[in-house]
Amino acid sequence: MFFLGLLIVILTAFAVNQISIRNALKGIEYTQNSSLVLVEPDEEFDIICVLKNRSGRFVSYLRVRDQFSKEVETLVKSTKELDYTIVESSQYMMPKQKLERRIRVSIPKRGIYCLYGAVIYGGDFLGMNEIKGNYDYHEEIVSIPKETELPNIEIKLSGYIGDISINRFIFADPILTVGFNDYTGQEPQKMISWIQTARLGQLMVKKYDYTVELMLTVLLNIDYDGKNHGDLVEECFSIARSVCQFLESKNIRYRLITNAITIGPRPIFENLDYGCGKDHLMNILEGLGRAGYTVKESYKSIFDRAINFAEMGVGYILITPKMDENHMKTEASFLSVKDKLKELTGYDLCVLTPEMGGE
Image (cartoon, rainbow, N blue to C red; front, side):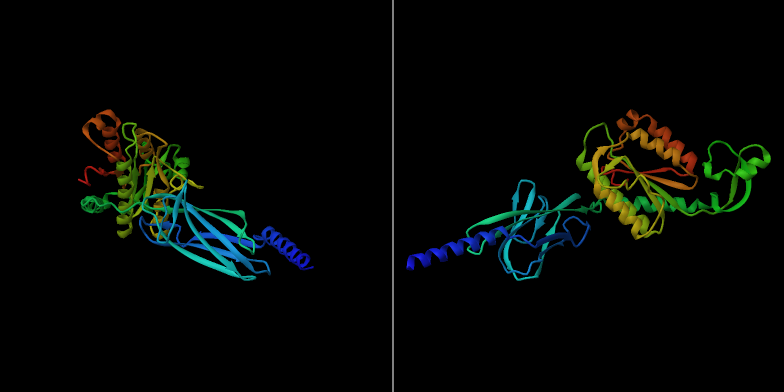
């Protein structure tokens, strides 16, 4: 009789244990997100992991393996496995309980990094078996370029902006029209007065008053002799960030044109217009963080685009990996394009490179 009762207890325990292992992850939900989506290199922030028990039962054991990009550095104990940084923890959960854990992390380099969710193991009440559940998640964190450490960038920019400011009076204000001139073929299409053209039977362009809002175009080129110059390109991204922040500090409207391909759901630089302010800057910084080393167009093509968009009174700042005599000879168009830009805009081209330090 004793053995029969013991057998019944064992069988009952086994059945309950089997039911508990089958339902170990029933009602378990998991989410993962970042406290910041744009971060500085080495800036600390939190990855927020939320675990919920939607069921009305007690969960005796859960083992959670949070997964992030391998390059993510954590301030808690973690391991590197394949392409992931893994933070492992275990806990029990009461019915309808919600647990939130904040994992302090940082990212050392510019680029795109991901949160990948978690693998969660649920155990039986005896702690002898586990079942596995994949709680996939995907969120991107963009680490923006560091500010450049080159000492002469602001001196160069200040001198260039000063020269533009002194000569502003020679350019026309697109707000105040004071007359009309014959179209020469060099004016932007938007300057054509279609009313005057229809009246006189020939193309006429508007003549403006002698003031203009200061605007600049930043040309970011990463194409140099067809080779991958990773370190120089990274410094170019940093220079571009510093240039944009400098222009922001002077309340100067600007845009950025680049031949670097950005990785992401939207084309950031393709539709970028002149602007100023926090949102404009953060949009550009995100683009610089998402930019890769792949070139979408040649050095020459980006200059052709610059000429097509050139406007009188709008200065140009070129950021490029190198600008030596051999390169200028190889890219024979550089000197002619530089002269053409000056003719169309009224200003010299300001050139910044990592090797020149802004000189």
